[in-house]
Length: 174
Image (cartoon, rainbow, N blue to C red; front, side, top):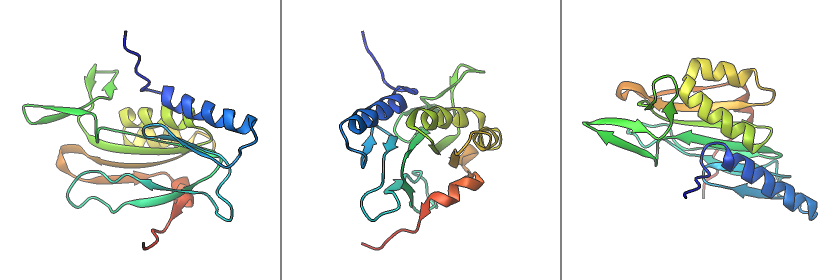
């Protein structure tokens, strides 16, 4: 038997790990689980944990951006690492339930929400729904925000919800 903690199990797992730390009196923590994160209180003197939003692996892709995360969850879904190519066409591990076929728009969807399981479920849903319908779903979810980078037919596109901008932190020089 093989148990795969993909889908929304990772979002649930990081939330549960953060709960365990809180019961032991640790409120300042960042839990990471393969593209999913749960953040407790921020580090001392900081507004949040500084997290890099993964850039898409494409020529002319937007530069990496950073967000500040505190008392929230973050999840990124996409085909950066899990995909295959058949006859020159890229297929994601994320399957569109309407077709039963892996998504073909090379994409990265990052969602920030009240907890990891909400962020994780929304990131996958937005990947399937696409930018327009996905952003509408996120906008209807209290406190959630989304950032989308994708390449349908080889053309780079970006989109994000209005709320996502409040999480940005300008990159600091090393």
